[in-house]
Length: 381
Image (tube, rainbow, N blue to C red; front, side, top):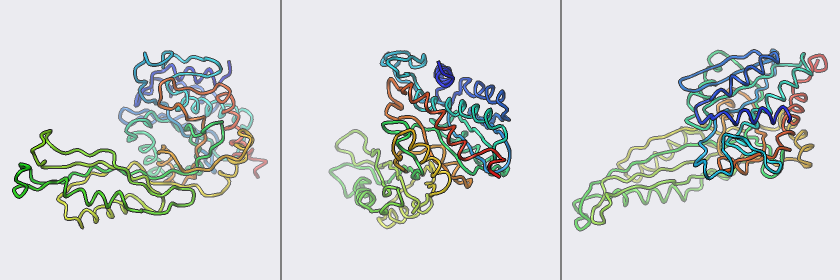
């Protein structure tokens, strides 16, 4: 078996359901220390983070990943034990096989090969891992990034190993992500009997016109390769369960995925003004998951496009779609961020998997990127 396959299987066998690292990061740290990296564990609360560096000075290229996984769901629904990696017909199965223990393993193997072949490389190669990407994302990369900002730790380029490919390895290059802003809006009314509406005030009726305006609004027309900003209602709740009672409150939850035309404070102010205009008696609780980021054309995108084209046989689609990733915490440090990883078709699903051929090719893809971006210091000079 190959180094990357062995390491991926070893990581999958550790039941690192978020935020438990279950020993994944010490395993990685030991390998990187043996390869000459300086290793700094960074534990915050119940979350393990790992920062490992090789070389010095600029540019600083960080490989970003996570060791935690989502719960497996009922193990009996899996064809094999989700935490006992198994290969069937050239496919590796197990929780985290695609998201993202394969990416972590490929990062480690690529880093080992790179520093062995290029001990005097330009700049700094770094690896940043967290066990809090699938969970609350409070004490993971968000907290690490705040620490880096305080102590002046710089990152110029960031490659996230999230599963981003769609059909074949390297067919999609993620060059940004939309922002994500969630809200829980509670509208207060006056509870009463449905036969006596004059003695009550129905919060659902109060809410409906404002909600209709919110969901019908055209927020923007998109930005560069970003789709337009979207507001989606995820839940509405009201009532006592009785058909003859006007409820006292109505609650609606919604989320905005937004382009760089907006930031969270501007959206919150805009929506607050709309609710005020409708005269609602309300409270609203906001949760800011992260601001949008976008990496413009430059050395990072150019290198990724060239390398990925060789692996996929065609130029990759360059996209800002999908959900969020921990790169949203690294981008505000001034870093340009891209995402490159295995096929994402099975992530978070029963029988999550990755093709062994893709897994074994992934370290070479990352290695070629490192060689393009951090050439030997003599050749760089």
